[in-house]
Image (tube, rainbow, N blue to C red):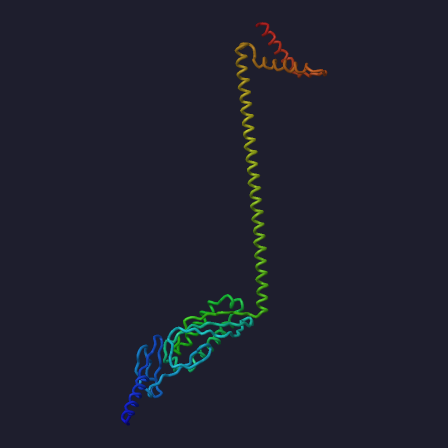
Length: 317
């Protein structure tokens, strides 16, 4: 092989290397910042891009990979999540606790993310930690444990405003764990147990109260029902006695009418009935072995006169 052959092979190799370095393929949702001779030149779009080898170069940016900082010349435009380590915070009532947070953010302006901040992940982490300390420092322990949504909203608003100059959009912040000291956890468990015992005692007393109320209402209803039954019984008994007296009176009236028709109008039928009852009474008194004393009333002469009249009546018949 002569010199020209080696020369052509070398030219072909250089062309291939030049073409390979000139053609840059950018995946979807990624980009690169190109500097030409150390100065910003362009932001590459997804697809095939052409640059000038050895003149244009991609700017490196710090990224977080597997919990460690690393340099990369590709910028990921997708939403990313940072899981920060636990940090100590102090509440308004001087309770120290540990909190760790999740941060969801997205690079929306690659130029600012590269040139406005030197270490973007570290800056976001430190900003999150300091902001979280400030927010927790304004809350008491009980508020901290029950106001996660409020803390998340405040933290996201502050971070979104602060990272806007870095070309970053903070979409969401989530608190994973809020861990108070063991002494506080023990006190909280005792308080919770006492509260449960209190609620159990209240529910028990309420149940007994309702039971007594229902029992008294049942006794009241039973008493009322018995009184109503007694009342109805007395009413029915009175109505029965009244009906019986009416029937007896009607029978006596009928008897008087019959007697009147039998003895005539000249003789009083009442005297006849009275004399008849008197004779029956004397017959009952005469029966028996014991001696009986009979007291006649002052008007006995009238009664005897009535009996005499009845005797005359029987003689006339």
